[in-house]
Length: 243
Image (cartoon, rainbow, N blue to C red; front, top):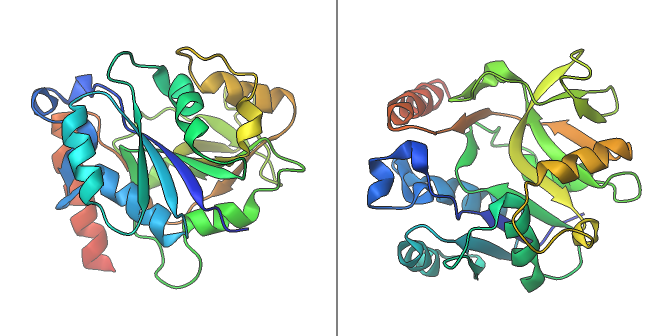
């Protein structure tokens, strides 16, 4: 399967990144010389995505100008200037601009580096892994030791076949959610048209035995504070030097 459309969540306030985000949106903060959102857009483009919706709120004009200049991907804007919709509501609003085929959903401020250059990318592998007959969602996961900037809390436990349960309910094989998943838009057809957290639909998929995960290659980064910028850049320099 080749997934050709995506939703990118980029509307957050970046509160913990202040004072940097007093003058710019968090997804445009540069890490290793590149805005965080460009790591995400580049990975989508590499995987064969042709069209992506990006939601905007904080310094929306800056976001729109940057996205307009980005090449190689049709980017549509989901405008949340009037009111933030949380990640779940943001997805529901944004995907109304997309079709009904399988999509990727990604966070604009979570990204990875150090994928093997040969063979399919993480997102290409995820597209091949996702089976809508058995799965409501399939997400990229990673071991906590291969993360930088994470809060140290495991999210899920992964079964031998990739089926996920909450780590708190089964700590046997801990993994961290890496900020990207595949799904059919119809899974959110009954979702509220107001702010809500997408975690409620992770739990819905778990209850149905239909939340699955796939281990990603490379090193995953999240940059939540100004102090974390230096740590992330040091990690990127180390990985590039060892490549």
